[in-house]
Structure formats: structure tokens, C-alpha cells
Amino acid sequence: MRDLQTYKRQGRIITALTAWDALSGAWVEASGCDVALVGDSLAMVSLGHSTTLPVSLEAMMHHAQAVGRAIHRPLLVADLPFLSYQCGPERAMAAAGRFLKETPCQAVKLEGAEPETTAVINRLVRSGIPVMGHLGLTPQSVHRLGWGRQACSAPDQERLRQKALDLQQQGCFALVLEHIPAMLASRLRRELEIPVIGIGAGPDCDGQILVTADLLGLTPSQPPFVKPRLQSTEMFKRELQSWCREQRHQGQTASPPKEDNPPGPGY
Image 1 (tube, rainbow, N blue to C red):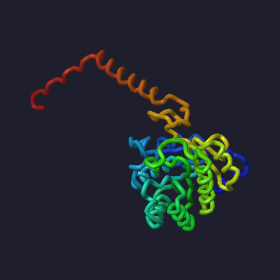
Image 2 (image 1 turned 180 degrees about the vertical axis):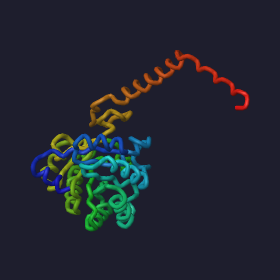
Image 3 (image 1 turned 90 degrees about the horizontal axis):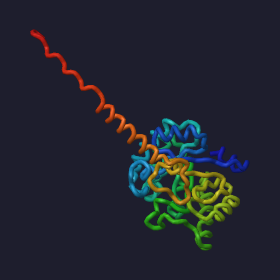
Image 4 (image 1 turned 90 degrees about the vertical axis):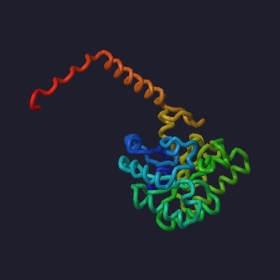
């Protein structure tokens, strides 16, 4: 976390990617990125849900342990899932503490900056648990905010700015800004002392984070701010279909197996 602060001062762009199992963790490790996030986006990427809300604390722990077996160099951060920290500081302490005790994660990420959330962040930080903040499009609030760009009006931008300052005051070591106007993210980058990591927030941030599956073209639908580097899903489908056809063809052309000789007397 101190390295991220140094990178901000030096103007070195911070890179962050998500991982959801040991395989994707190995990809992220090999990428050379600075931060690996076990995001609750795995509810959609890996578990087939339509939102991040259904994933449980136990499931997040399970996936964090798997990712941790492949991650050695990047800072490993885990999302606290829905209802693991919105129900008071005690439950949040227990949930966040488990990530640091039972997985290789070194920090947790929380969404939002309502008074209840900032009280939780203050408690976690004072107890020695590093916290990354997250503002803008917060997927755990999808039923209230939707999936669209956030903070588009001047009043909303000022509210988000105040929340960002509050998260810094409460001790967050970095802040993710998702799907907000680039001008606002650029302003906050210069105003905040902590690193500002954008996702769909324009290029003028201290760092960038993406869902690895989106970046690699592995998801059926892409966010509007992500252009996949590969068309992996179609490529994988073609190769798997080709393999199945090859096996069927080989089975049709192979000689029929010979019948075993019946056992002789006294077998």
C-alpha cells in the first residue's frame, strides 16, 4: 500500500486486475500488475448471477483462497460482499478480519460512503485492516442506481467529491472511481492525496482497474467502457467444437474392437 502512494507521487500509473480462481490468478500474476482484486464481480463472471448481490461471504473466502495460491507479487485485495459490512461495525470487523486471517488477502474493498459505511471504514482502519474505497457506479446498489454512468450533474459531482474526501479522511489507502465523468475523476486525482484508480472514469487517473474477464473477451456482454482485447469466447467455442467433431470422426473411422477370446476350461 505504501508502494501505491509512492507511485502516485512519482506519476507511475497503477495497474489492477480482477481474479476469481487459481487459473485467473496465475494470469494476473504473470501480467505484472500492481494490484489483484478478488472482486464480487465473480458472482457474475464465475457463478452465473445477473448481479453481484447473491455472492456470500463464504463464497468470497473460498475464491480468495484459490486466487491467493497463484498470487505472490501484487497487492491482494478482496471485496466485502453485500450485507457483510452494511449491518454494523461488529459484523464488518468479523468479515474483514476473516479475509486477513484465513486468506492471503492484505486489504478489503468497500462500496459507498454513507455515514454507516464511513463508520465501518473508520473502525476497520483503526483496527489495522487496510481499506480501499469505491465510489461512482457501485454494483451492490444496482437496484437503486442502475448500471448507468454516475455523477453526471453538478450537484451529484459535488456530493461524490465530498464523499471521496470523507473516505480519505477515514483512512482509505486508495479509491476506485467507477463509470463517472472523466473530468470529475481527473479533478479528484489532483485533489486527493490517496491514489485514484479508475474504471470507466477516463484516462487521467493514478491507475486503472478492469475485470479481467471483460478485458479478455470472456463475458457474454461488455460494459460500455471496456473494449475486449480478444474475442476469446468465440475462439474457445470454435476450438472445443472442433475437438468434439474430431473425436467423433476418429470414432467412426476406427476399426471395431476385437472380441476377447472366451476363457478356456478351468479359467
